[in-house]
Length: 303
Image 1 (cartoon, rainbow, N blue to C red):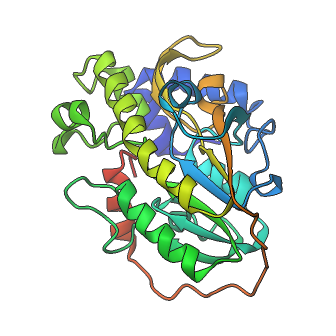
Image 2 (cartoon, rainbow, N blue to C red):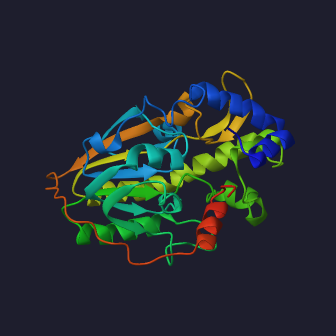
């Protein structure tokens, strides 16, 4: 059942109607809450799992020179909120610490029932960069260094925001400035952004190139088996199915190859960790919903 606001959005933007048809196709008329072909992250073998938000497999393969072995996996979601719910909900992960630059789990904390040993929300306070309107990869690495010292016997789930928008490279800095924050998959479809599609693709590639050196540093610092992957991919002008409209971004419920095929890069540094599950550490601070919404809007989400 659709709400009045959802129907109004479709009425004001016919392209949304076609994308909703595509979503219903992939979700089997709404009977699937997530991509059932996707991998179960917490049943996979790793000591440290690095998430590059919205990282396409083909772009990662093109630019990565990381040590180790690259294959691919299928994600359970085509958007972060969907990926979180499909992998996290209903689980007691007392052996895992989630070090996250993304506000998405916090936004969904009332509907996603999960217990990590601890959650390090880098985005809450000093970790958020007001100039670039995101959490920079060097800030993530600094938080990971602290978490590695504090939790030597825990699995680390590390969530970078890049290559997700905002675009931080030279093309992105020039073309996507402050008044173009709402880079959303539907905006390019309707022409709301007067931007050459190749400019979007180049800005995205630069974000992938930007984050990889920070990943490389962690691979050489983190003990044990580290996997680099993504929560979902990113459409950059590909056409949907069965309705062949062009799309940009990562709409939930669209389980095509470009959105669900993600990198799975494995590298082992020294001996494996001795992982121990322990009672969760209670979250000690809070943040108001206005701040959460502001962060998500600056990341390009329409909240």
